[in-house]
Amino acid sequence: MNNNIIAIIAISFIVVGSLWGIGNLISHNNTQLSKSEGMLLLMKDNKFNVTNPEITVKVNQPLKITIANQDFRKHDFIIDELNINTGFISSGQDFTTIIASDKIGSYRYYCSIHPGIMEGKIMIKN
Ligand SMILES: [Cu+2]
Image (tube, rainbow, N blue to C red):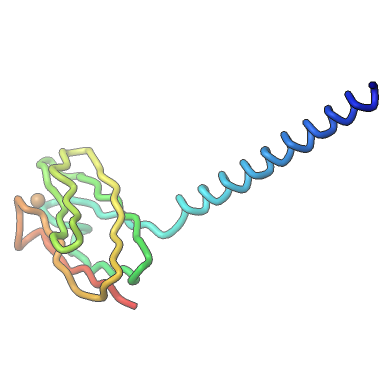
C-alpha cells in the first residue's frame, strides 16, 4: 500500500518533470525564433531608412521586418507581388510583418502616398 503511494508520487514527479523539461525546450526555441534575423525600416522625412535601401531576402527564408513611422505624417509599406500592405501607419506607430517568397526575383516596395520618393527594391535571392 505504502509502496503504491510512493510509486504514484514518483511517477507524478517524473511526468511533471518531463512536461517542465518539454516546456523549457519549446520556450527556448521560441526565444531563438524571436531572435532570428529581423529588420527595422524607419519611415522618416518621406524616406525609408534615409536612402530607401535595397532589401535582400533569401528565398524560402522568411525575414521579419518592422516598419516604424517616425515622421509627422502617415505612410504605408506595400509590396504588391508579395501581398504585403501594412495599411496606413500613423506617426509613432509601427507594423511588423514577414517577407517570404519561394520565387527568386526583384520587386518594388513603396508608400502609396509618396510613390517615387518613398520606394525601393526588394531582391529575393538564393
Ligand atoms: Cu509615405
